[in-house]
Image (cartoon, rainbow, N blue to C red; front, side, top):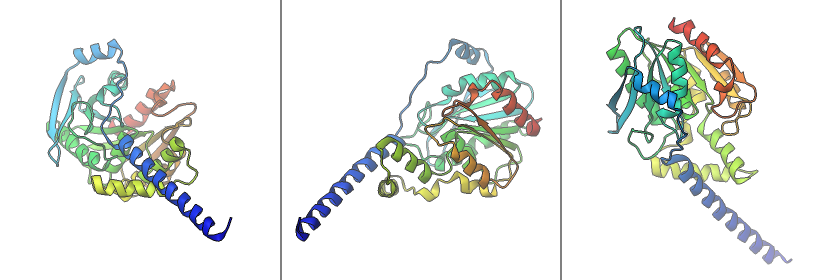
Length: 298
């Protein structure tokens, strides 16, 4: 092959690669940002429990005008609360089974629908950027209604990122501890992992950067805006990190990254054999989480 043909073939391959990267970045954008829910079948006993509980619907309006929804389940006379925050593709009903177990342990529960989920308004997720701001409204709601309340923030996956990123704000003294499960260390690291996993790319950098460019144009977000690990560097609220070592959605290694970045009081609870947000399959899960929370909520 002569020199000119070599150049031509190289240019064609480069152009083909670029078009492929652009297509993948567009597919990723649609896959990971826009509202979609996967509704699991809910066992009747949990629906019955909600119906028989002192549960009522609460609505607040976000800083950008969205109506947000939650259930306040106040079954106990004291003011110990868990604010439970679901992940992407889910809504508050995905946490019914966990809320049921924690309610049995004596906690009141605020089950929120994050923006773009359940009964809350919104078209797309922001991976904790706006969700963390929304969480301030729910904390404010509880502290105004129950001034002596003691709060644990509990989140799964993007919900875990939400509560970690909320530590970048000035949280009231009422927030006593955090429990994060299956949370990602940063958006950039998480998206690079998903691109490699889903599209079998060994070199993810071009797609990662093209995706960020699309994010900035459509949502005004960059990777620097979504970094739970950096938010934790100034965190002073005690936090429990939980992660399954068979997690194929958020790599197990990210728990170590988060743990190492957190400079305050912390505890690590790895779960052998658990997949993404499946750590409650461990027989000691509720006992160990309850023990951690009670240390700070009493």
